[in-house]
Picture 1 (tube, rainbow, N blue to C red):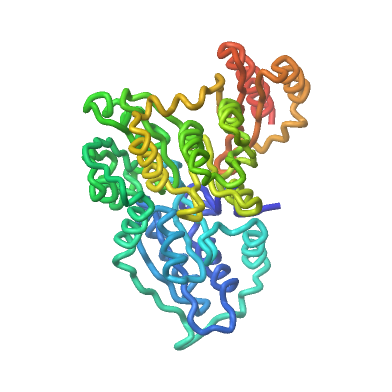
Picture 2 (cartoon, helix red, strand yellow):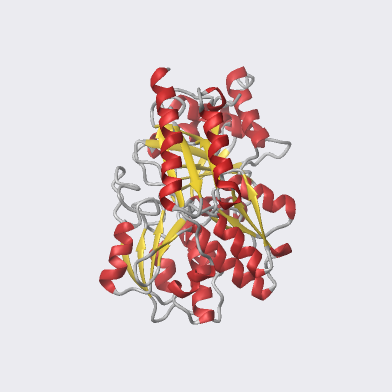
Length: 451
């Protein structure tokens, strides 16, 4: 049983278990313990988003790492994919991101990258938990000159900006393209505007004044409505909404219509297929992706491989199967030919390259895929619920699935990052699937109230 880690690192309300300074320090000590070998110089990168609690967690992590005799490289606010990039380019032993991604500011989290820029596998996370709760490191306390030291990397943003621009085809430019860009008052505020402007775009920027408490508040990839409205108001060619740590995006076409991760994947996969650059003609996505994406891939002559929910599981399947493109409906898009993790800015650049190459507006390109009606409802619970033991729930699920047959599907799962059970129903009739979702949610709420 996991005690700290969920589907994307450790996450929770800052200054309450497990996101306390004490646990953060122990996580820092554990990471340092795992990376140490016979070499004398070990380094771990630490970056964060713009949350107020980032200062507290950053200092606690740094204290833990240095207390084990490992040096740290502090980069300050930088998107999660930027930390992965700096970790590999600086030849560091690990990278740590302090962020709760799209969650509200009072939450925070810790995500860890290996020296190769990929997120830690489950077994390494379990090793960290074991080191913390078994107190195996208690007697290991380097002293004198063996204690680690901290160095600040002042040009980390600049390095990452250059790396992002290098993923955009040199034969293209963004001259004449107007972009509405929402940085969610998060980690991309000091990076994304520069990337698009330096490539020639006119940028109308939003969400670029973080104050520690406004990250993701009614903005960004989770709330793209204001961005879409600004596209309509300004007549922009494209709207881009990033989340708090910059590892995902949602876009709007020139008419202000929201385009989700599934459609972006369909557009980019079609282009890669045309260039014969989509390895094994396979797109990797999660069980949450719309059935329409599967239909579109088959029509293109490719296939869709589904994984469990979480971009880390998409990446694991990609690496294990030799695939190079995948992602999630929520906007995590992974181009393994360019980076090791989801990157919202990078994904936007790849989408823009397709628009320029095909000389088509986004509304036209999005027609490569037609979504099946899909409803997703979240039930916030006060207790841990075993759905198989909820009175009448398995029978209701079986009955509804039989009713849908091959015309749709149902997925019910607990969130890995918050106390929520997600109910997703997909089918041909919007009213029907909405009613089915309500029926299942009611059973979950009834069980939670009875606990």
